[in-house]
Image (cartoon, rainbow, N blue to C red; front, top):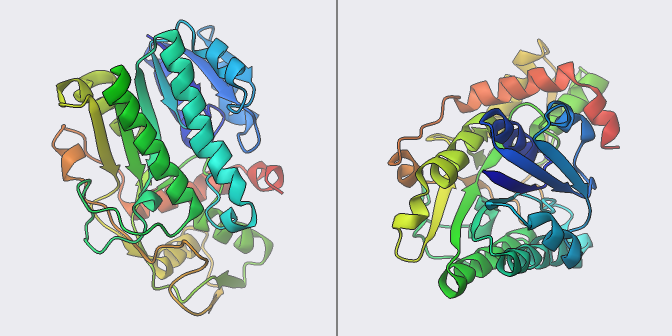
Length: 324
């Protein structure tokens, strides 16, 4: 197979790229390198079945040219800055929703009909059912990022119905592991490397979050969208999967694991309230029975995922300088 991977230089996208190449597929990477990291593609660049296009998804001609001859598109490029969404409201619309429309149109024009899309648990707003299933009612949106991703889901399902696409949507919890470039583990490790005696935590440490290791995430995506092709058995040729672990932890638990992994005992300085910013859901816990029914299961616990992330960040301090 020949895959187009958007966001190929990103955290999850680069792992997807490496896995596809390892399986013998040909991969065309597409990234504007606004947040993607060239070192993440070091192994891919050495593979003759990999090629890279540095361009913008807001350029319809660039994505149309890139998708020609591909069997499927793994669309993982996005602006994922929930915290900064209100400062630049147009960015989520452009980089997520309009970019996805351009991808779908390029696929339609080129006759490519299979798409695997990275959505987010944030698209669910703040649900009241836990663990939250794929069939939950969609409540009011609480972030521009989540709203833009839910709009993308609507576009993809519409193209499946209207143009016979085969679509897979994955609503992730926060993903951890090697190449992790942002989020609370990144922030905490960066703080502790600069000052091992104190750790400032936004909020009171009570939020409950589920996490998933990036290797388990990639396994789930390719298991359903590449190996099983489950959407072909669905009435609308469209499948939504919640991806996470069958557990959750509190932020204060994660902080403790990070300190232990770094052999530190800093003073923990908590803020107030259960939300660190607008759109920060204080409880994220997805029902993963649907993906488990396909034969996939996570291999890392949340604590193991946190510890593996800490080990990678400590071994790769360049990531902190690259994101200044």
